[in-house]
Image 1 (cartoon, helix red, strand yellow):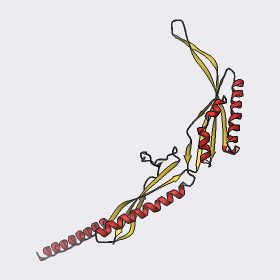
Image 2 (spheres, helix red, strand yellow; image 1 turned 45 degrees about the horizontal axis):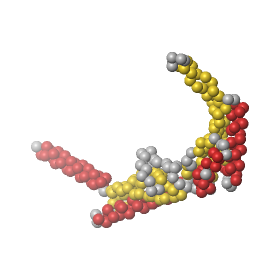
Image 3 (tube, rainbow, N blue to C red; image 1 turned 60 degrees about the horizontal axis):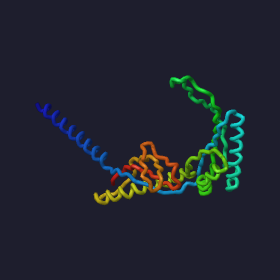
Image 4 (cartoon, one colour; image 1 turned 135 degrees about the vertical axis):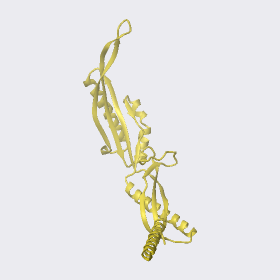
Length: 241
């Protein structure tokens, strides 16, 4: 009988120790604070890429090429006169497509198609660090149209060549912001922040400055705005002393 009580006593002690350790472990696991810090900055693009396309329609390929070459010469002269170096301009390959017109019979039914000539297209890309100059050129493209150049111009794209520096700076800002938030929480709780238990970086977002662009789960990368805003978050877990 005594041995039975002894076994029960030992079992009770073991259970108490296990439960005590479990409680201690649970307490230690929860003895952290998790905060999210934010880093933001605005910057101005230092690289502009402007695309356009020269087009021509002609009954023969030879005539179409002649039109494209005339337009190319006028565009080259126009860009040179504006102060752009030749290496900033790249002319792509000339694409040629046959053009057809539908043919209908007297009853209005489709009877086939008739060859009408060729359409030629050559892309032009201007890439420069002189953002202001290329912006002005893109806005004054109508002067080329007045010279008989058939050209399709698109809005410029803006880039920044030092994004790695921006990203590193934002990580520092977001981390500092997170620590400040954690310290305030700890002060209110009457304790102090210890070492970092874990840290996770959020998605790098680039949007237009003063715009209503939405953030993307995969990260936004604005190319339409010259002035941009970069944003990053840091989720950091701190141990509490």
